Image (cartoon, rainbow, N blue to C red; front, side):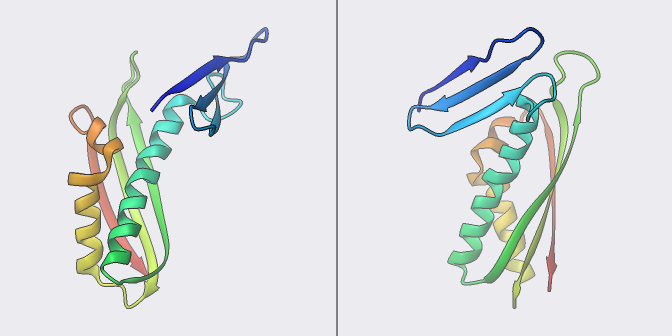
Length: 134
């Protein structure tokens, strides 16, 4: 995997365009005019883990129709302002969704499959919860 991040020069902006070698792009900004790099990391935690949860639930033949991951994070007060805590709350909807299967999917994602969470877990306290909505 390769990527390039390029500053988009202007007088006061800290905008950067990222481009993967496969062509996908993402715009980030350090002045709040777009997603910040840390916001992108937090979203990546939720997206990575949600991919796992959806795939595991599908393989278990669970009839899920939606999956949302609500994230809340705390950062250190002083630089470097790393994440210290992340809470990921999964809200899954569908017909006859088994709580046992959902608990297993969240645990497997958190402990085995989600590379973003696993990269962070030695430095960040990560808590997960879930609920099933009818």
